[in-house]
Image 1: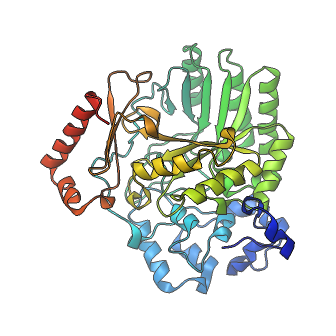
Image 2: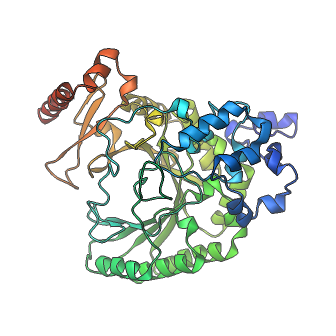
Image 3: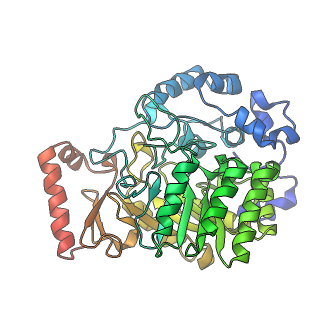
Length: 450
């Protein structure tokens, strides 16, 4: 889906500055008569989000064939995440080619594209709950922790690592609940106060976009009031999938702005960490929203996930970094895809990440170049993809250590089995051979054999 270009002179504008503009949403049958004021209303976006095949059919009508709806319906029954897609995202998907579209892949499951889960997959693969001294509060790193403020999002990403607790129950998963309860928050605040080494708090969920304005203000003010808390990151995919909220939800935006200003007065940093994964997600509406944040001095950083068929291409990643820089959004992380139930079709090999990172580095300014990381399964935390102790592309096994997080432990990461040779794929289905491959990799790692 190419961005709208007003005249021939605009062809000379660099690609990363060419953003989709105009009433592009009107190509969707259900949105043909929707004007800009209505489309920019965040309440309208929430009300008309797609949550079922029935709503999808009512929205797209004959834009896609009947077989596509059947494929989606089957897909709904085999994934851990509930489905919610904003009209904004629906309008950015290329419905002439929905099977290959990078945005559709991220949010709408198709049974025909699903692959078997990796045998080493666990629902809470990062052990967030195991590292939680208080429910909904993960303390893994010495000076940083994760506060899960709620369990809902404005859209649900198929690849969400927190599928154990985010969104509604599905046929596959009964979710852990993170309520927006003051009593629960108070227990978290008391724990933080008891840990003077904690300086950095990530406020996430779920998605901070879905906090009521007064609840966002309450959380921000209470965290800022703790003397040793120096930095707060408000984590939200919202700017990528519903940027109009920053333009039309004045109460929520006001709460965000006030927290940032209060932090600045206290010489503390409050910033926004968002999640654009593909340059197609960036429109003129995105720029208007990011411009407003820039005008109020609010720092925005981006964390993307490397996904097969979405952004596992060196040129797409360069374009994403440059386009985000144009919006004054700093590329911070690109994560290797976690082992998540129901989305093996989106994972790539570690070698893919290594190759893309090598190409991206040097293509733009260093402070706009993302760090490519593996969030080590088992709770090892974020490790540079290059820092493995051992990696064998043939077996797809890599091993990392995290000496400052969990010294003495080794953490496995695994390439998707379908990317390996037929012989190795067969070995992965054999429990004995699987353990032999893992043990051989561990021995190599302990002896320093890359």
